[in-house]
Image (cartoon, rainbow, N blue to C red):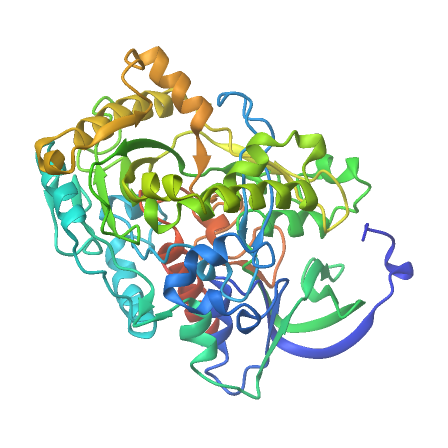
Length: 544
């Protein structure tokens, strides 16, 4: 629905709440759940996607791959053509279900390194966060998967190239480390923030959760204070009042879009869409970045005996970078193809082979059925059983992109430009990383597996040819961040208390507030931001 004048907007007025949380993802479930622990708080949680219970694969650990290809819980978006990455329109989907991406991802739970949080404002450094991480983990109860012959062989190979095996990848030391990462599961169940902070607590009279509720805009008073949230639910446009604060947890690709539709953002951009400007905030939608990744694939002579991406390593690949000497800049994920090759192809192949103008639900489904049929052929399945990848992830990208509106229709995605490799150092790091990944795969630790490199292949040797391979094969790691970056200066959209500058009564508590991504996955840092936001709101305290 497009924006149109206040007097003409149809609406159903709902109850007033103390807090309205927009987005039931990794951060939003924690914000709402923690605020609702105080029975005096009236909390409304709005999630645009369905309830997790409607899609049981989001609640079962082994079914993470089924959730990944379910369009009902994994929203489809695409980046604009990436100038420095062969003009690809890379996939930019995220979880759209209770629990958000934490209900559809591979359950990796990594805090990041001590050095990562040195880049965040005072009050958000490693020592400031450790008690809060521990509080989250008491609720989440993450675990690690047991070792297999193949994962132990991968570790042995990595040790030949300067990695050090570590027992706990969440102790803050990720300097050239390899080990079994913590994962958000317990027994057979996935432990998303929805499960840990909402579902486990049971029904609470002071917490209202609405699924299928898409926020259209935040409504402000003439004094630029939040007054209400307008959202679509059950086919009607409704409005709920916020007596205290609104907390945006819709994610790095939706929170800035919602702010712009609400009249908060770069004023010239908003006027181009005839959106009345509530507050001129030029930095909203800037500093967008992501962890791009590229695979190095190997064919082994034995079956891969692993069915989860459970082994991670972190390394300082580019020693010429000005990052601190102990800061790892890349992540090497050891990916067993038998775990989810079919599902990965069904998700990622359609937009690669279908022209953009013809891409849609029907054409996508045709390609997916073809992939599914191919995997019923015994030879292809046997090939997959022997296939593994060392996935190179750029953990500390220096490239920064933008997010802008392309329409006032809330159902249309924003223009997403992570600007992969726009900073030349990023490509330098990736080229060096491909060389390290292929060296690990060909080391003696994996000799008994007879690993043979398939991609990029032995013909790809020069820096130029490796860079060409990287540009053509880059995909997202789904770690979008920074589009409402947190910092101490007016150049940052959000202050260290997560308050949005230019208005009052509104906080941003999701990955869009992250100023520079940790080298690790973003699920745990996003949960941290949600937990810290709830603490701030409950106590009224500020962090110095």
